[in-house]
Image (cartoon, rainbow, N blue to C red; front, side, top):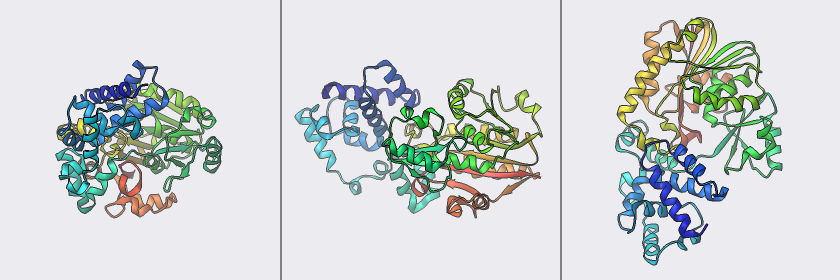
Amino acid sequence: MHPKAFLDSCAELVKLCLTFEHPADAVVSRYFREHRALGPRERATLAETAFAVLRKKLLFEQLARSGSGPKERRLAILGFHGPRDFLKSALSEQEKVWLDACDKVKPDELMAPHRHNLPDWLAQALRAQLEDDFQALADNLQLPAPLDLRVNTQVAKRAEVQKELAKAGIVAEPTPYSPWGLRLQDKPALQRTEAFTRGAIEVQDEGSQLLALLVDAHRGEMVVDFCAGAGGKTLALGAAMRSTGRLYAFDVSAHRLEALKPRLARSGLSNVHPAAIAHERDDRIKRLAGKIDRVLVDAPCSGLGTLRRNPDLKWRQSQKTVAELVTKQAAILDSAARLMKSGGRLVYATCSVLPQENEDIAQAFSLAHPDFMPLNVAEELERLKVYAAQGLCAAGGQYLRLWPHRHGTDGFFAAVWVRK
């Protein structure tokens, strides 16, 4: 595509994403469906340009004020993810001068919002938790996340898959904490690899893998993934169970569960039973009350721990939406707890970094349910032979607390209880 036409496409996609009417990844996917002539490299550049604008929206909007032409074009120029000479060949002389001036702006010359690129309410909440470490997190959240894979231990061993990918020209390194994980710095076409086709690998962040590990599901047990979604953790649990026992994948979205079906077929698992439920008090839940060995509640949350992958969330969420989610999270956890048999393990998790969705929910649950004994997560991770377990946890090891800038994972929280 000619550079000028391609830059126009970038500006068009940026404009669509900035309406915030739908998740950015859905907007990008729809754009690609409507423009099927785009090649893989063009698609990658378009997507990364749009996401760069979302990551650094406040800074780019400030810099764009000194330019001319449509705002979305100026933002696309600032966020352009392709070769610089290609970009400049699409610019007027005036735009080139403006872009060179923008490039000379130093970070220490910027105001705080243009350095952290977060809405004020979120910046305040994170600064209250992290204090001097806040800017390190903010800087990290403006970078793309690496691509993590989970090796399906039903099919292959991690070292074998690492060698197999290397032969295909894909460099992968073992994740430091998850025993199942491999990390890629690039984003190759995994679906074309034999490892993907035969179900040996699934895309899953290392932090998400650790949540599944914490469930500590065993052969022959009855296990529930209460908010299964597209089933990433479900598949990890099924493999840990060695495809034995019975694993229920519940979700209120039948559409999301549909996305599990092809992944389930590839995995080779035969113990997974997906089921759409109407709500957390569905009759299916009542029939299983007191019968389940392990329950994972990966609760609907703000997703603010995933801003490297989903930067639009910081502009689409608000204090009001978080408050609404907190009410829902508490109700879901209460309902899931009814499933547990005596001695059963309950895991509550989110991919949020906000205390009100995490520690506050866990503490309120413990107070309201004296029949559930909290477990020290750091001790559990040590028992599971996870490297540097104490450093992954907070509150004296009571909770899993993963941070992108400290651990290289998405931001995750988990609390664990055993029913007395």
